[in-house]
Length: 495
Image 1 (cartoon, one colour):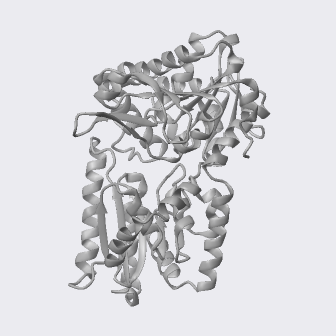
Image 2: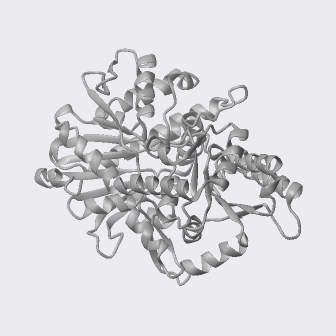
Image 3: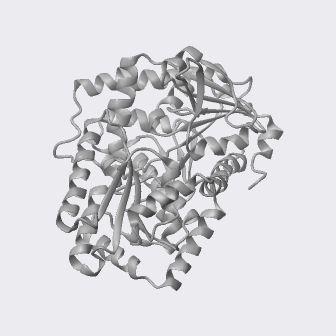
């Protein structure tokens, strides 16, 4: 896989990446200097390998006033990397609000995570339609115009890589703007799950038709799992009239254009994670975690405070286990490291309140002056999270739906105790990690409680075997391989 972008060099391709949130943002420091802060996440790291070889432009929304003033220019995201060209689009405030906080989140995000309580939500009213027409569509059009302005002279010299559900309509506007001979190769990767057609049936036909038709204007459409890819084809077959599908080939033919669907399971930057885990500053965080555990066993979860992460049922399962198996009283601590997410969305605010109450109920029932069964730490601190991952006996990942869930991959890489992974069957990570994990249904609190009990009592030999299997699987395909698989597919399809 190390030579995956040789073909790009030979064709002198230019790569244009577009994502709602970019690889860096600017802000003013306390001393008045405008400084750049690199974004976190494996996507930024993976694309550094491209910046070394290929002319790369990254387009995203301005998030700060400094971003809007800066507009565009060359940035280096690490000391040893070649610069890439960073360009910000600046939607007006009301358009961005409709685009991001009404349509993308929560409407599309809740739909694709199958999180709607359809007896009550969604309520698609005039404000929703205004957000679609005056927010989501115009911002996607702005992205398309920025991409168009960045294109090289010929179609084969450009590869556009669109990221995720915020940009579903970009391909439509690019296709409409450019004649076929000038269209770039377009690859769109969707990071979140794609549910079956029955769920898409709740979205108004006008929105649904526009999204599906736009996604069928791309050349390669990437998903986290094979199930997601198949669900997309089923959705097209159900709702996009005039489209012809080939399940075995993963191909859709629509309006004289072929779209190829593939699964590209995203992964982590293994080497970077190991460097963080070996950093001397880890010692203080490890001491902090050890003081919380106090020589007990550790059940750990690390999540954003999103309803799809199923945090409340995790606490309920722990409560059930303590009910069923009193031998675990005062012998185990459930540590939840939670990162606040989308606190401007009411559903997320309510969920944070509810999960705090669920943890408090467990502590009220079973805790005493010497033992706090559930410990919550709310805030974003990645080095502390890595320290905790090194020390868990059980890692709980019980999401209701997840595109991948990278915590499930980070934990086995750095864990030093042959910890056991309890993994929801509804996470994308299950496709790769099932053989080394205890797999549970996310809504089955009783089965999750039994899995916790089983993991805490598992023999050392079985723990070692499962941990080794997980580590081997994750290290074999890291974040660079995820990117290479997409570029290799472009080359294989001669796009």
